[in-house]
Length: 192
Image (cartoon, rainbow, N blue to C red; front, side):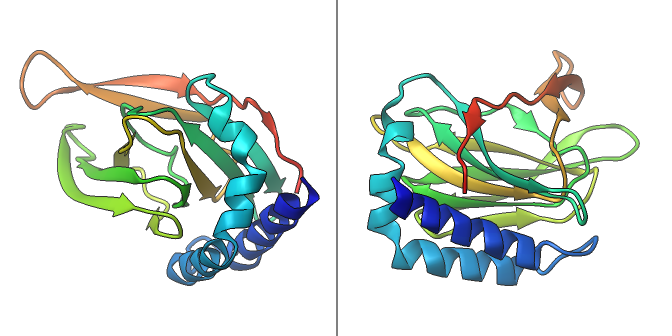
């Protein structure tokens, strides 16, 4: 147990070191986080086995947060084939990195005037791979665990507390989207 906490602490420290300013160097943060995940993949897998076997559905676990500059670090557990709705991040910058399993990330751009969404890209993340986005009210995405059988785990770093955000679903009239405010829930804390 202590061994994986050591690795979570190292991931937290990288996030805190690089998570400075309004527009941090997310590419460098991703590179350093990915390097650590590749070097310690088996220890992280062994240490986080309980999260992969909980069978409680999609869960968000707090690893650490800092007030100034604001950064939060979470681990998320994705049940087999789980997909989120299209959602934003409350204008925060963010980075998502696969720890175990594989995730598909579909990126969307939201028109500031009409609210219409347009798909702008798709990434596939395996262990140590990351996707990131700047602080922007127009960015949204949808994520999906690509496994039909196994829980995936991801590390998320945000430029603040993602307490509220919006989900988007296409209205009956093509090109129009319904936005629904959501509140984030945390399943618990992983102390690092």
